Amino acid sequence: GENVEQHPSTLSVQEGDSAVIKCTYSDSASNYFPWYKQELGKGPQLIIDIRSNVGEKKDQRIAVTLNKTAKHFSLHITETQPEDSAVYFCAASSAGGTSYGKLTFGQGTILTVHP
Amino acid sequence: KAGVTQTPRYLIKTRGQQVTLSCSPISGHRSVSWYQQTPGQGLQFLFEYFSETQRNKGNFPGRFSGRQFSNSRSEMNVSTLELGDSALYLCASSPASNYGYTFGSGTRLTVV
Image 1: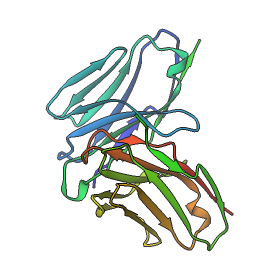
Image 2: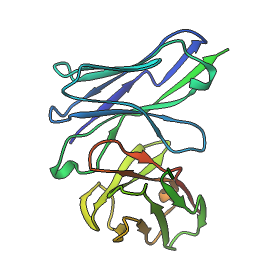
Image 3: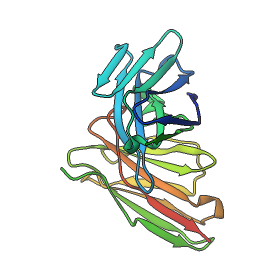
Image 4: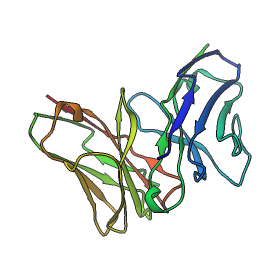
């Protein structure tokens, strides 16, 4: 089955710096890659996602890049703010069959933005 | 637009008991998935329902079961609770499977 590796496990940056979180996946059939932000006491919140027919997607300060050949994708947050502090998860899924509704998650990255 | 609603938010049960958790998806969403989140294992997929049918199941024992009703609301049941079942149980819904999943805030289950 699919396996998703996420690095780093913790990331500490100064306010205004950029943060990058990287994930690799194992199943070449995976075609959907969402990123979630989870704050304390809350469920994961979808912040951006990308499908395998796209190499890059941007939404204000957040961007995701995908390299299908290397099977890795990354989350880029620019101009970080203290409210960006949270746990970030990458995930991967493929369409249909035994993958219905199943997201395989990375282990998570604790991002801390210092004022 | 209302989000995914999970009830109850917190639950304390004794070993050997059973528990039922409820999930109301976003209106119009027909796919509902369940996940278990623990510090050691992270987020692990339990099962997915679409139009009242279980289409996919993760690697959990048969003590974990679920169902979906005609209005897309879903329940999951855990029988013969073990200490290791203590976790945050998350429900997520999607308008169609495999993308755009919105998570609820979860049910924190503690087994004592």
